[in-house]
Length: 247
Image (cartoon, rainbow, N blue to C red; front, side):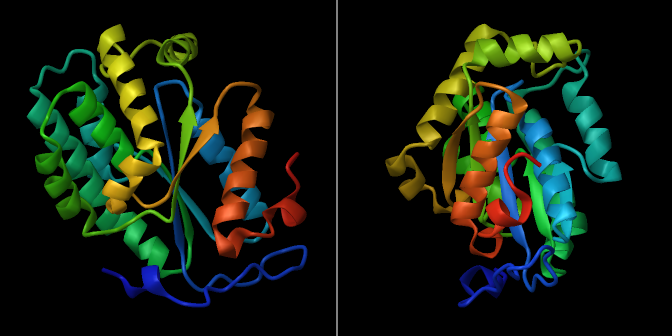
């Protein structure tokens, strides 16, 4: 594993209007049920970091590479038929390619990477909702990520039925969104468990997880995101004063 995860004395933001140097990248993940606002908040935080002079890259799972985008098409196409294990392995293949081609090089270059979905989605959807064995999924995930641990995961919390209603208003339902109410309730219940201290202690591969209330306006949720990130990522601790929560 990259020794940067154990680095002492990580560089802080310069306390000026713009950030002039970041020596090591950070991986910040956004998770939540369908329609929780992950993509919106990834984009908002990305714009704020870029405006502050922080090298930033945003990606989504599945996707982010030519192979991953093709896998995404297969996974989300309502006409696609596949077993739970095939589904899980397709997600892992997309993740492995994204890690190798985009995320790891960006982190090594000192970029802050914002990722829309990662470990917790796999555990909630393929383990909690599909019923695959946790140990098997953990092993496959370790191969796909090469042991990479997120610096912070922001878990946007919202009732599944509210999120599905949001997603349906936004566009037609994709294959995953069409999986049924009981499926999405199991996803919601799994994600709620992941926010607990005992579960996190038993799953160090996921890194620190912070629950963020996803109810309210985009601006209200964005304020909560900024507060959580600036409080927990040392190199981003000047976000409040550098950017302001209304950016």
